[in-house]
Length: 273
Length: 318
Ligand SMILES: Nc1ncnc2c1ncn2[C@@H]1O[C@H](COP(=O)(O)OP(=O)(O)OP(=O)(O)O)[C@@H](O)[C@H]1O
Ligand SMILES: [Mg+2]
Image (cartoon, rainbow over all chains, first blue to last red; front, side, top):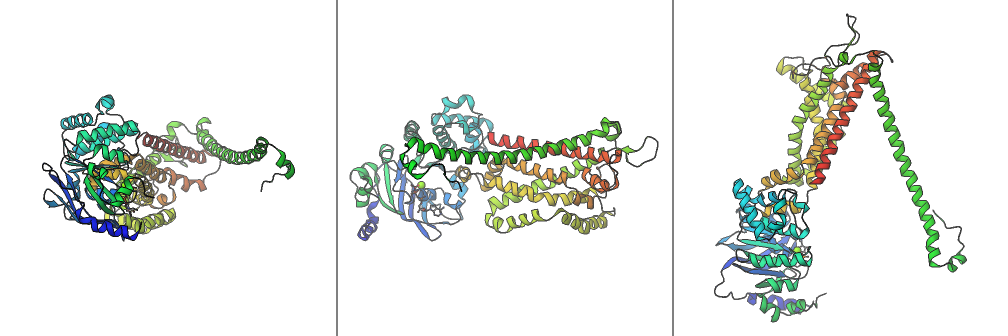
């Protein structure tokens, strides 16, 4: 990359924000978010909003900071001692990126699903009842939530006869849907997904994509993906990250068909090496 | 080391690829065979040693009963008087010692297990930095201290302390339990640390992402996930406590009492064996009964190993 290109990116920072359509409500707004791992500046001055009941895709080459930024949105970077997150992340009129606010409380509103399915070594039922139990749900409530969540992710018919079997017996795709069900059972308002289909086969992937479109009726969703077609298929907004910068953020349609930045064009046409 | 001497270069050029591949294959097979012979030999030496030991102890241990020198009734009684000249004597009742061994083991595990697991959680989850830099080396040093030193410390500090605070003689079940608790603590801690550390970070993150606090994550997920490993640590510690002779013998007083009073001096299987083996003549019932006790120790150890096996198997099943 030439130094001139760098200059272009930086000057373009101000006008990369899409104008939300009239009916869209901002659910979460990140302002000037920076992340440092020790002295490494991994995420630089990100300004980005998630809109209610929409899907926002984060794309960009490996190592550009997508996961790191996503993990800011539920304070998951707190668990990494060397990580330092600055800036404001506004949700419901409050900046949640303040160390005096309880991260656990925040995470109860913002669910997360990871790249590799991470079911607990418990039964299918116990995996989903995990969060409700933490919040003091009764046995009957748990039972209902388990069924409801499994229904939502389309896993109910597949597992209803073996709810008390180990979750590790499920296939990779089923495990990932279980992890999504587990997050839903928490009744969050936002769900963050970090490459949820990268370890899955095409059929499981398309099931999860359909699921995401379904879930967007109830939740606000942010998803990191390396699959450009996936971003185009399921997202309403797309954010393109490059080397820690947010290069371009726009309606998915617009970003894919009329990208305004040279780097975006290069990335979309596969001209990156 | 290996040289292909049977194939001069010239011939090598002429041979087909198939043959070329065939001749070094012979060499590979030879290497393979040597490796197999070496490992097989090691395994057999181990197996033979093990089984002859087992056979030796078992035969020695059941001999007095077969020969009718000691009756089972005599052995499993509470009356110990191996040199007694009273009518009906000598008495080889060992039940007090068996119970004594079990008692010190159970009580010390009861103290060390919660302490050790708690410390392990602190070292891995709460303060890994401090844990790795200070506690880990401390634990390693604790493991390295020979048991005679533990016994010596118990003798100099714990026995007088018990004597002064309770007015008893100080040598007691309690003193043995305290010394053993300290001795098996490092075993439990290091096993627990290993298992807790081996839980993938993704599980912790999964739990945090569901809104669990750190303590909820520990108590509902990490402890349950690592339970088989934690139990294995505890059982290993118990096996060590059960088999420990020297340190225990130095502080428990060695009186053949039933081990149900903390302040009273008692005996264990190991302490009776070490104290008496020098005073007995081979072939006498007094000597033989010590072998029977050794057999009981062996059987108990096998039992502990079996338990560990079951635990680890359950762990694998998830
Ligand atoms: N725990 C960590 N400690 C130090 N540096 C880290 C850590 N995690 C990530 N980084 C660095 O931060 C940068 C951004 O990483 P991040 O995982 O956010 O990338 P990404 O865009 O998600 O990449 P990928 O598409 O490969 O998942 C990378 O350069 C990475 O090396
Ligand atoms: Mg990533």
